[in-house]
Image 1: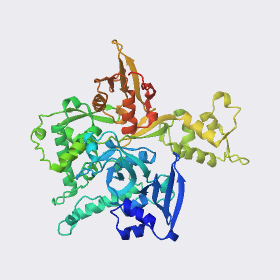
Image 2: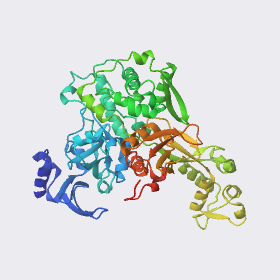
Image 3: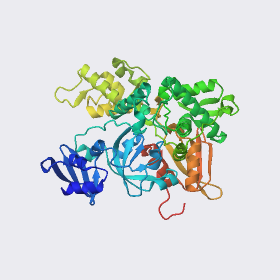
Image 4: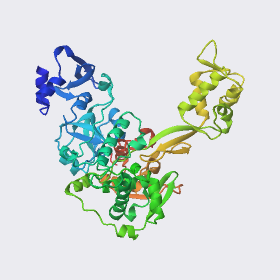
Length: 555
């Protein structure tokens, strides 16, 4: 009875009947005492097999299981699917990761409890405490920490339940009255159904991240319900409209060369009209690169591959009739707010996967499985091939299954010269490790909304260095941004504003197609925060973070 009273007090939007359903009788409710990693004592209330509430420092919080039944219990903010992994790993939600809906952000005060959902699905995947009010968020230009995250889908608390996935709950895109049969045609109803199905696929992990993350626009609707034309025709028109709008109003000559991913993410999406969703997959072009090739054929832009596999817009004909004759749509009061809040769409780091290339010296080992010199393989494929080879050739030691006998081919491929006559068996783990070490390195980079790019060698890390100028002043230099889909000019502009220091972008020494950014002073701390906390790049791909100034020392 006391718990019901506490829930009613903490969440006044819940009705008496809903509270009774949420909190059953004594015999169906269990109380569990847990300790968080920090040592905080947590009281968890279990109903059936799931935790429904938890109490921390005398405050009562709902779990994601409860929020899936009552999605409107807390004000809900939306982020991208790629951000979920970071939240589960313990990160707080940064404001650049927010998606601003057409109706604007929910109104909250600092310290309010909020839910966090993903684009395309209203089912919350995390709860957190607002680090600032909505007004302060907008005033900051959506920069900085937005929410201290307390609990997420896939964390230990979620694992203590039945481990179910979030249900698919369609976003609140229209007033319910507008969804009556008289006002919504069958085509639009079908589109809403497809949106729900896409949400289910994303929930079950069946949509690749590169595709799931392409749904990045200020709006949620992908079809104009007042337009009777096919969806593909509407999307082609919307794509061209956003492209021309971006070139006419947002892209400047100083921005060139401009990564095509930046053109799409930072400029075209933010030109999308209120209530519409720019989705290239639903257009006749299917891919951004194909659309831009078409625009190049019309001689509106020129696209070049400045870094291998990474395309940039290098020239724009601003006097082209398509641009000069383009009439900028009148923004509604709501969409103006959206544009302010989403001027720069969140950056999505590429998915980087290590691969292995078969060298000439190892072709004999891999040819039985149908691979030849130069074949690219994933680590698990290599392991499967080696295991199958050993079993097929009866090389597993009959007395000790953990050992593998080395036949002439294995000896030639993985042993050093001085081991050829002394090593006759190896443990499985040693055999597999040696094999991976003998293969040539390669990697695959997948940018959101683009096809995977496979390259030989190792990906160059983002390199941060400090240099001393003739005036005895230090400058911070960062290079190799392009392989990670980062535009050096955009990074320079952000750092100039954050550090209140002058920045320059120059060609990187020893490279024909790479640029480096220089910032006055020791700005490694600002760079580290930008790359790790806001862009969520893995630390292993960044070199030089240890050069940040020590506390108390001048930069």
